[in-house]
Image (cartoon, rainbow, N blue to C red):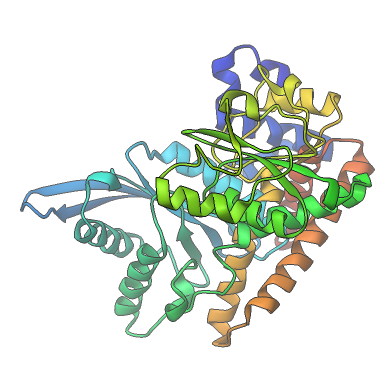
Length: 424
């Protein structure tokens, strides 16, 4: 199957085809029959809505919105809402399935969902975005809710977007319903520790991988691609844990220091100058080559398809921790496995975000909120257990970690479907 995906670079870079390839390999190894594969592959519900909005200049425009609930077998659908000009139903459908597997890997009681609006937030005012968000919420309101489907921020949406959704839903319900979304401001029922959660999850599984391989965190060199919320937070937390962040790669370039970068100073430099380049505590280096530096840990935390059949053979890291979604192609999986790279796949490595979103949902429903220490302790417990589950599956079945993660996720969802049976 992997060979078929790799018949051309174009097919290899098709993220959704790669996900399907991994799904089929996991299903085959689990011995799932064709009927169960059809159920697991097919979205439970899909909704397309029109969003008429009056723009600031008085013109009327109609945007298109989507919400897909891939699976609700293990609990309410869970997944973000993205605003972008290229949002399509196919993309949202594939991302919803991805969320099903991610929630199952960390064993939280959610299925997978995803939403999106086809628009360009860069040319829309704050008022226009609010009107789009509120009308979109009104159009999907029968689909969502604390027991049905719990949205969250994604590309080009944020805690303000979630506040608008919560308020719109609450106005229709005639009661304040904080648990309808996660990723909210703290004052509206958000959770402490949520902004750091994805990066902290990367730290936790990296420490587990280092322990498994017998490597000392104090002697660990880390290269991070992406210095945003995920990569930047992972860099800070790993630096505090004693690791050396030897290189950071961003769109404008890369900086390198073999003795370790001062991450906090680099963050301040970027705020002051708008770039990581020309940082006094490091040297500029070629961003196209920095990913192949000699290191113990490589964290792609920026975008998809950065590790392919064209460059996987050049990766020198012992551990690959996928902070981004889909940074490695299916063809590259096999190359990395043959080279002995210990891969922590995206549906495990970056699941800290959805895990703390789950905590937020629990706190909202309880009406009782935890301090940050408790949030972080419970996140660590779930991430450590999930890491052990994945590597245990890999050891048991003689597969690499990504296949093991997909096998674990499919097995958990299929088991619930079999226990519940089919309503007819």
